[in-house]
Amino acid sequence: MNFPKKLHKKLTKRKEENALRQLSISTDLVDFSSNDYLGFAKSKEIFQKTHQYLIENSLEQNGATGSRLLTGNHKLYNNVEKLLCNFHNTASATIFNSGYDANVGFFSSVPQKGDVILYDALIHASIRDGIRLSNAKSYSFKHNDLEDLKKRILSVRAQSRTIDSEIYIVTESIFSMDGDSPDLVSMSELAKNNNAYLVVDEAHAVGVFGKNGCGLIQKLGLEKDVFARIVTFGKALGCHGAAILGSEELKSYLTNFARSLIYTTALPPHSLATIKVACEQLLITDSIEKLHQNIQYFKSEIKKKNLQELFIDSNSAIQCCIISRNENVKRSSTKMREKGFDVKPILSPTVSEGQERLRFCIHSYNSEEEIGKVLKLLATFV
Image (cartoon, rainbow, N blue to C red):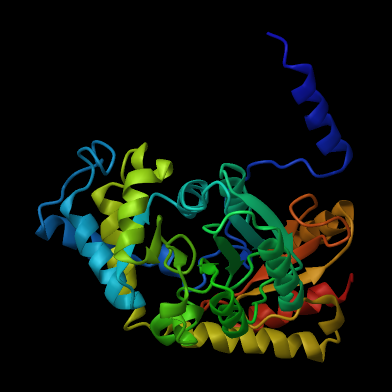
């Protein structure tokens, strides 16, 4: 059977731009690429505690058997959602199968026709996809630019033809491709002063910032000022799934209208048990402190090797070195791999053309020797 011509043309164009994506198998190289910031994904202790918990609670079950609204809402859901409410100081938590599902479910169902979504220009693809499915209008504002956001709000209010038109302001507490943060305190004030709803994706902040890794929103004391928080478990918590945090009414709404929650088989008990054990591990681990020590050491080594002008300023576990053009950054990543380091190239169109980069993810288990060596190697070819 012939492959559709339009699809073939798109694949050919990707190849010509040196931007064709391919699936690869994880390696035993020194890890500077995964989102496993605390090493929880490989933790034997978490694995064993999860197994023991399932055995002790007679949860020897492979699958959920249905969606959460049918047969899949097993008792662990309630237990884990209560744990998340206590940990994140929120009235409700609604677990979704992934961060992608959570963002698509929220943005496709919550903003209504006549409403407006104002989103950071560098917002995650899953949020963009959710916005595309929404009946609301949407406009981007310049990355982390409060003045541009303010102009957008004033423009929307001036053009609004209905009294009940709502504004949703959307950002991330840590941006996945830059590792930087917005001024969340000022953004929260701006939202309050303009009767707008603030929505924050905390995927790369949970497990990294705040007391016991509760996230940046809680660290800043903004829990009551944010309409919804999206937290994910596939990054620092090393497992799978996500949750939307907010009011009880928001939970009820999502249960009734978020299609990515309603029309999919629920997570199996093992996934929920792993989330539970990983959250409890955050309360006792010293990995968060070790992670921040490594982040600071990485930043100090950047300065020592006079590389700071190539890096986007970030205090998070994500540190990015700009190397323009896909062929250049892919070549740089290959050199890293040849010397035993796994550092992924981020290509356009994932990032803007000219902003291609090596994305270094720092972990609690990286040694100072590994950090020093990888940056010494980088300095030889940039």
